[in-house]
Length: 387
Ligand code: PMP
Image 1 (cartoon, rainbow, N blue to C red):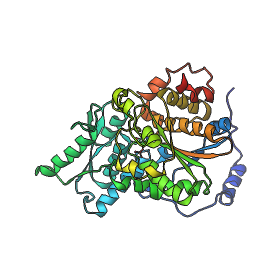
Image 2 (tube, rainbow, N blue to C red):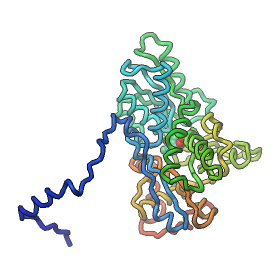
Image 3 (tube, rainbow, N blue to C red):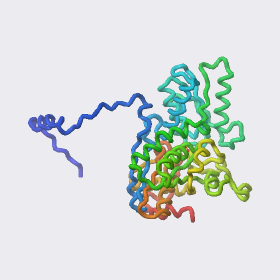
Image 4 (cartoon, helix red, strand yellow):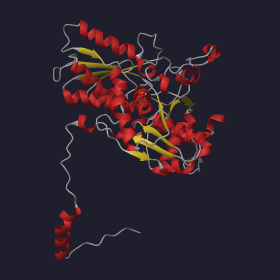
């Protein structure tokens, strides 16, 4: 059956509707964002209905994919890095200066968008196993992109090392226009500070100060550190939990104080060697941005690829929420924590980016897990790591 709208032919009725408009529309103050930088932050906090109903806890997720420059929480970080560099005189808008960065993609996209808005160039180095959508977006934004084999940090061509080297080459090359700056998201304090001054306070105010736990994965660690440093100050009892994929050393670092125990040192494959489909989180070195907030992280939860893929499908099927891999990991960990804490708790996590950025990799495999008409229970997802 088609939904049919009756056409209003009665002119008097139309006139009446128009004349009533001023009474039903409340005219607020003008609300105009100044460029894309003005569309960063103040993202909505969404109650995920399906997960809340299934766990008896309130599971709330900050819709960070709605940040309006590069569509991820990295907008906050990229803006913070650029503003800090401008304040310190390392960058001058519209001078043709180039920003170099090593990134899984999200930070690069945020930097590239803001670079366009401020008249900089962006040169992005990223591992070549990240979804092709991200490098395509970077190219369309006008960034120069180098994709390199995933490698350990001791390798000169590891994506972060390469970005740093390219910035130095720029500085030493008199033929290059403007200055070259290495953004250094893993080590710069502009990263955790962005979350300490915006994401954390927003979560506190949007929840009315009522939350029991915050759950997040870590790549640079800037999100979990900045948010937890703020939340622990205003809510000392809040529980901070890391969500970590296989191959990452952060889980052990939180649980046992070491990245790898002696047994694992022999056998376990590192993050760059593990063929995981989750992008942007998990790491095998202690970065400044993780370490600065380390003492505030209370616990860690491991999340497998299968769990992340099943959760991504669950969120589409039950809530119409279409997200990428790190967001799915966050939601698995939030649901697991809800089961641990028991009914009535309030847990906040992040939805980092949109599924459209992960169509060719994460989502291509996600559809292959089970049939789409197969009913999944949340317990099936949470227990998938015990199979
Ligand atoms: N999700 C995605 C999609 C990311 O790209 C990143 C950062 N690489 C993270 C989560 C992790 O955030 P952070 O670097 O603040 O730990």
